[in-house]
Length: 264
Length: 248
Picture (cartoon, each protein chain N blue to C red):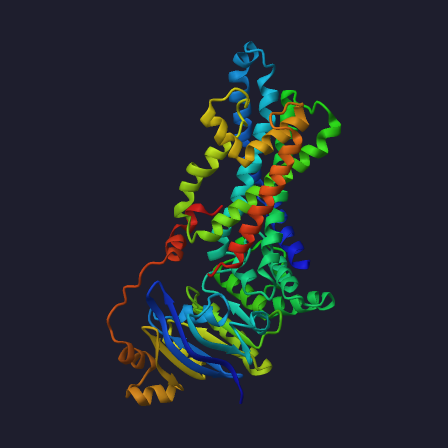
């Protein structure tokens, strides 16, 4: 197996605060890799660095052999991402959102329509293709985002809390899609979640990050062995403690709270 | 090219779909036109300056372009955290193209908005003195729109949330509007006010509109277009630079 994601000694500092502190790990091609940690542990910051949205203060990141720092365009072509907050355009239809993505990723004109149709059918949104996204429920939006993230045939799919706030039915559905993709297309999946049961069920390997450092990495069995516990949740609490985390509220979260007030 | 086009198209589609916003944003210019135009009309007439409504129309057109353009630039703050911008930022396309497409889209929308106000003004008996000059007026509108979309983009690239928005509104957009000569003639102003007006890019935009629509000018059309083209170019360069440096 080859390493599709390589993270070497990355550090990210924000005004003196070290969010990610000398983190290194690898993800093998075709793996489903869970990246866990308490709030503010550095999960999202790491994903942002991997996906070229943030530059690390120091260290090296490679996806499929290309550097996320020096060869951004090659890296950007190789992954698909579903963000924590929806990044769809509400004023556009499901089809238009897909179409815009196909233009941005320079998918050949001849293939666009077919690929969009296949993926929208795959996430069961084809009959809603002409509806504006603002009429969609949270679960439908998430499904559409997954379809969009797959449109350019990425090698890695990043999912930042893909099932947050979704009901068990939708969660189940989404994971069925993703596991299918992983099995049939060999897509590597890198995801974060707060639901331990979810990680337990789907992940081949699990990493836990806390205070910006990786505290453990391995298969579920290895994690339980090393911590002498019976479940991932117990292992997680044993490693990261039971203390509540007082995360600084970021401007992003403040805006998220006010969002409803301003959005038209 | 396709990136620029698709982002331009997105701005246009969004504009055409949000009818309530479209109609809502016409309320303010109309109110200004009616309240100020007819309110100050008699005084203006007595001063021997002719019709105030006609004088006011180019200023109000400039105002609606100013607001629409600034907002479409500032919208990036929202888009950046919750919207489509994130999707474009991880796409394998140059950020500069994203910025250009967005800005052209925002500027097109603002220009259309200005034209709609101009058409509505014809309800009050307004029409260009010389129809041949109308294309020049449209170019002036486009330049005003480009400048302020660029300015909005530059500001939005520096801000991470909407906290500073009220500040920008009260200390930037409003002064730019009120001190541009949109509402009053520029001749015979007190020295300090005169200096401020001379430094205000919108003053040249309003003047160009007034010259091409009702054949009244203060700076002269040549200076108007030179200043507008130069300042637009500079602000777009700054905006592009800041935009490409955005980290999310």
